[in-house]
Picture 1 (cartoon, helix red, strand yellow):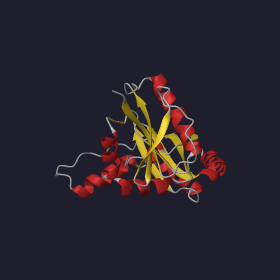
Picture 2: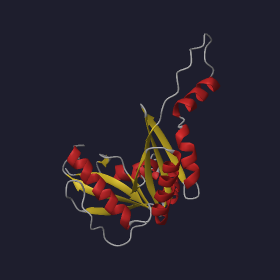
Picture 3: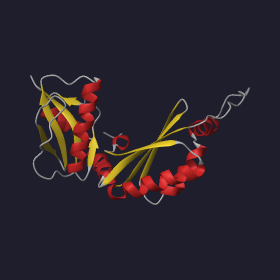
Length: 213
């Protein structure tokens, strides 16, 4: 029996969807409350191979360019039938609509740079309090080299997420779609003036801002 592969949620869809899914299947918008689920029917959910992940990104980018507000689903999100799809969305409809409002007409920009870690502090003899733990986590996640760069693009940023893996920091900014080139020019200029090496990519669909879905 075919499964429903759920690719994204949209608050409004303009016209017929001409983009095809990862398995080459036609895509359809299923209305659930005031949200459209963009889905395809497949015999088996595609595996996360390199080729399929590239297809997924191309498909998502094409959908995003045609849709004012789009929340990408995690790769492999699926429902066995319409009742399960309805249940997946109905219970979180209010929070999903808020997330769709937040990404409406906005793009994700991704900034990656080397974040030199601080020298670890000696462990204390006493048990660490909750406040001390949170402060230590904030120090671990801090990227001092990015602070002046953040100031250079603050006027366009509507949302920010950050993650660090080893010495690489990834900063995700949600900005108006029409501000991409000005954002890129400003942050690259600030990086050059500050002697900071970075890579700026985008615009992308708001992958980093779809965590409620």
